[in-house]
Length: 623
Ligand code: AMP
Image (cartoon, rainbow, N blue to C red; front, side):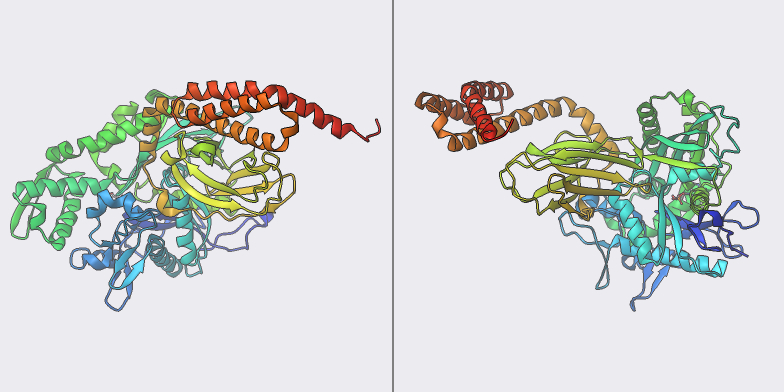
């Protein structure tokens, strides 16, 4: 019997409702539930077969779709019709993936723009969301077959580095597959949950603080994440995250393929796609063999191929070193030393490689924790999360963080951060803005993610127009822009004009194609360009101030001619001209000086005008 008894007191779910945990992986995917009797998470499997469903999709000439092990069999023979690593394409444009384009043996449409990539199979086009939904549909069907009950609700995990658009894409894929996605959870957070880390039964009772700092090292087939989590009295907090969305066991396989091609003295161009794919599968076999043996030998297309464990370790050492550098960066971001980490959790099939385990253990100066199957641990944690949502498990609370700052574009193309990087989520922030022009009826709100001072160097997530602002002089409307990141890490942006009460609910559609860039690269760039960025920001701010002063002065002159003498008018015109000229040059000090000079010239009659206005306002009023 696979029914979960739901705590009726929570009132949020029907009794016997099944919520599954899904690890939608780059290489493999799987489903887990909390066992109704043991109350422990278990991965679902048919009889004695593997719980892992290869994330591979095959299309036959009639459009029939096969997912999993059967589809994997076509990787060699029908590479054009067999899609693998679709997760790598989630939320990406062709420009994002073009330097890795040769990795995909199927047709990824090169439309040379920023829109979301599509994959072509025969005359059909599929988005990565469609492709992921095929995998999820298959997982749903398998789970229903095993559990003999409908499965409509799920918790799905994503890499910690997935941005908002990629999280939303995963949610959409779930919806297409007929699943109500109750929560998107970071994979490392799920892994920690599966290890039971942070359950209140593990923490001290009686109000005494019990805090533990752990590192989750996740090296799968296609991605690498390191997360530093702090767990205090059952409360999870992600202190920092780092990683590389283009690093995993697939790279180990490619290193072996390259080694063999050198061994056989063959060039890449001499091989057919089928042969390359065949070599890739052989390389994966060799890699797995070398996790437990010292050498691998085989024959491939009549040639002898071999590799020793030592050769393999030399090949992958630079890749492992890259992961260690990410670990150091994550520690630095969290303000910690390796010795501060009490538990290191290993996740992902590639952590079975002995060199990986040894290197991570050496860095943190302690044995790594690998007792839970590294292929299943994320799905098991997703099942634990599902149980928490179902109200059955009250031992955990979850807090996550934003990996990059979120903000909007302000005058001069500057980034105005509303929610800073590493803020705890759920998070909420709001700020007021105003109009630049008299009678301005709409305001463009462009949402960006990143650490640079100018929005052009960050990632654009969305853009919309708040319309219907009633006609008012510039600077009078008060537009409140609010950001809300919910517990799933999904961002909602709202804008409201406060004076008139005009409120428009605006749906923000993430611009998938524009959103992908490696987080680590962005952070690094923000450090490299910090000095230039500060100087540029100061220049942009000076220019904006100068431009605003010019506009207000012009406006003032047309409305108040009677208050200004001829001399004053001429002096003002000269000062305006000087400032206009300064604005065409990128010299911050010159712009500031000319702005100040114009201010000086206009100050006396501005004050006179103010007095006159007050006089008019007071006339006829009973005091
Ligand atoms: P995951 O994305 O977590 O499913 O990890 C899949 C990756 O783990 C693939 O690159 C597999 O080749 C790799 N993997 C699985 N088992 C082993 C093993 N015994 N030794 C080395 N790598 C493995």
